[in-house]
Length: 121
Image 1 (tube, helix red, strand yellow):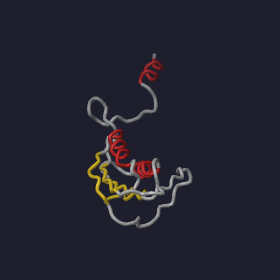
Image 2 (tube, one colour; image 1 turned 30 degrees about the horizontal axis):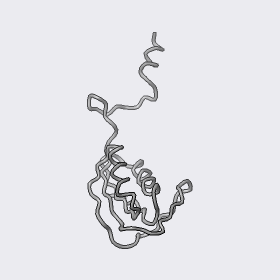
Image 3 (cartoon, one colour; image 1 turned 90 degrees about the vertical axis):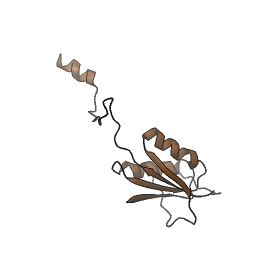
Image 4 (cartoon, one colour; image 1 turned 135 degrees about the vertical axis):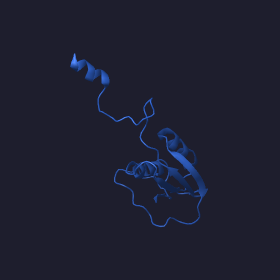
């Protein structure tokens, strides 16, 4: 199943904010499709994927208006796009948690090893 994130009609940073919020609640390996007509997204989406270890599978033109206007969240910037460009559909596969040097997922302990070691002495 692919999660659709609708961000046509708004400018940067709104498409990336919506993408990040949707991705935060999904398990590794999930597919997310971001539809946006923000010209900056052509560069912002690949950069966001690269920085977070996600895989950008494709970026293709999409025709038509959004299926339904997504209401902005209360803390989302107001950035209407007065001159939308060609809408693109970016398909992204979400990565798993970051791996440690040994290649296994490193659980977060919320503290540092040196603090734990010094408390045992």
